[in-house]
Structures are given as structure tokens and as C-alpha cells.
Length: 213
Ligand SMILES: C[S@@+](CC[C@H](N)C(=O)[O-])C[C@H]1O[C@@H](n2cnc3c(N)ncnc32)[C@H](O)[C@@H]1O
Image 1 (cartoon, rainbow, N blue to C red):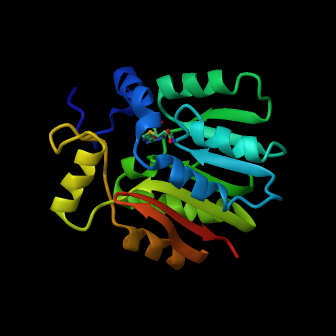
Image 2: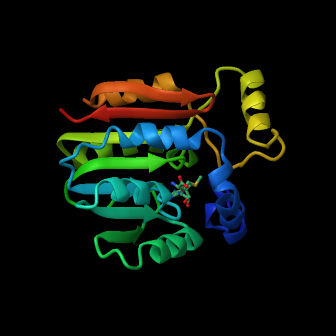
Image 3: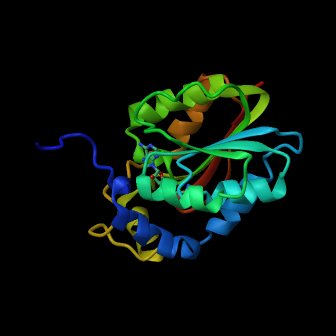
């Protein structure tokens, strides 16, 4: 049977291995992660990580906020396996299988929703719907922090970015569905988020965040 849906290669274990082997070497990502950590409130108690991968971002957050409980969500068997391994001794992290192409399951409220380099794999319509679902999940004062791969304003800048991270238009991940920062910040404001901003950016890597009033 032919699969005519949007391309998403993340259920392939080869795709996952290729990413995990070079995940630490992605230029400037540690700066983006450090910027994200600043936005998690000291009194946050429950955190949801969307597209957790092997749990690297959530592990950084849990290190800084050991009193939190967390849900780590992904749909890729290889990533879920890696996350379960990372959090095997951490009873406060629940690893959950879910495809974000579909509405989020009922999790109960959380104080922070975090995500890194994951939501850009959803089609734009689903990104928008997910942002509304995230707003509904947050407690008052809760924050949404999306460290994201966003679109460049021009093809030349896109190609320069790819070159700097070791890719070309021929080798870039066909699972990417990149969207500009302005549209995404606009959606967050439209859904009622306050203090919406792009707090950090290096080329196509950006930290978008907003708070539920
Ligand atoms: C580039 S990796 C990032 C992983 C991790 N957040 C990190 O920063 O290293 C993208 C992640 O998004 C997940 N992902 C992509 N599409 C998804 C979907 N439809 N539902 C759930 N997870 C998805 C992939 O399985 C993968 O773990």
C-alpha cells in the first residue's frame, strides 16, 4: 500500500541512530537549551516534554528541578526505548507513546510544557491545533517553551543554515515542515498566551515561549 501522508522518518531506527550520534554537535543548541531552562519556574511541579527523543532536554530540566514529576512523550519506538533507558531509575518520569499528529491524551494539568526540535515535524494545521491543546493543559502561570527548528525568511539563508549544520537541500530531513517564527508567535497570542516572545535565536534554531495567565 502506498503511504500518501506527510513524510515523517522518525519511526525508522536508522534515522534515530543518525540523529542521536550527532545530537551533541548541533551548533549552538546548548545555548538554546540554557535559555529554555531559565523559563522553568522554581515552583514548577509537573512537566510535559513533547517529542522527547532520548529525553535529553527533560534530563536537563530534571537535573535543575529534581522535585518535579514529568511525562516524556514520543511516537518513535527507538526514541521511546532510549528515553526508557535514560529514565529507568527515575520513578518520577513516565515515558508515554503518542503520535502528536493526533490530539494529546488527557494528562491532567502541568506547570510547564517543553519541547525541542520536534513540533516542526507536524503539518502546520496540526502545529496550530497542538498549541491550543497545550494552552488548555497548562495551569495558570504555566509556561510553554518550544526550542524549535523554524523557517528562514529566504532560501539563501536556509541553505546557509544547512551548510553550517553539515547538510544540504539534498540531505536535509524530509520530515521537516518548517514554519516562520512570526506565525507561531501570533498563534500563541491568539490562543491567550501572555509574554509571548522569541527569547533566543541562532539562524533556524529558536526558543519560542508564552505563559498561560
Ligand atoms: C530532532 S528529534 C528531537 C528529540 C529531542 N527532543 C531532542 O531535542 O534531542 C525529533 C523528535 O520528535 C519526535 N516526533 C516527530 N514526529 C512526532 C510525532 N508525530 N509524534 C510524536 N513524536 C514525534 C521524533 O520521534 C523525535 O524523537
